[in-house]
Image 1 (spheres, rainbow, N blue to C red):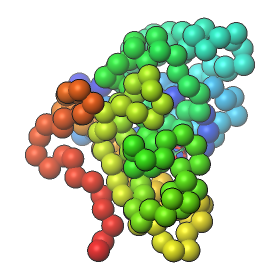
Image 2 (image 1 turned 90 degrees about the horizontal axis):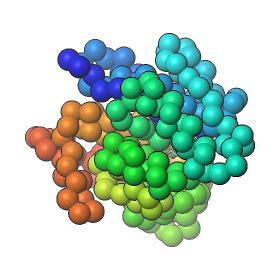
Image 3 (image 1 turned 90 degrees about the vertical axis):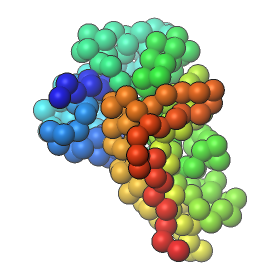
Image 4 (image 1 turned 45 degrees about the horizontal axis):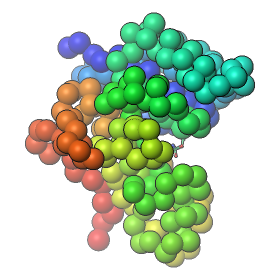
Length: 214
Ligand code: GRF
């Protein structure tokens, strides 16, 4: 099998990167991670990549005068590594529209809410504050609007009466680690087409959300 080459952009602890690394260690997984790029030099995600034998590079946004200049350097690293799919995994910088256009249909992000609810930061606090009974995560194709773009996979968890943002985050994170590899698999296998705002998933049984037990 020819695996799709994946570049992962990170800024922090990298638990979603770890889930992608673990999934791609399976010879049957249709994608391999060939490069991890961090904008933060000390990010723990870099250690995870190194441990898995995956090349890394640090591109600090602080070294560039503009977002476009920073993105262009990242783009150069990704293209030099032959990357075909970009995964954002806790990457905490907004991307310029030219970078997003360059990876249109080939760049995915994981967001810790059931989009389109609770875009932006502090999603678990937002969910508790709103009193929703279900919360979760979304993997979506990246467009130039923040936390928008066609949805590939969602997973839901219950919100419990005594949840704090941290306890809820932990419950959602467990699902993130399942949803992200699932979405990458779909994209790498060419099972995704986009129609308007919707991602259509082709193939049997591939788009089943993970729902809480009744
Ligand atoms: C995750 O909750 C992800 O959904 C959000 O940022 C967090 C990153 O966590 N985009 P990690 O670095 O993958 O552990």
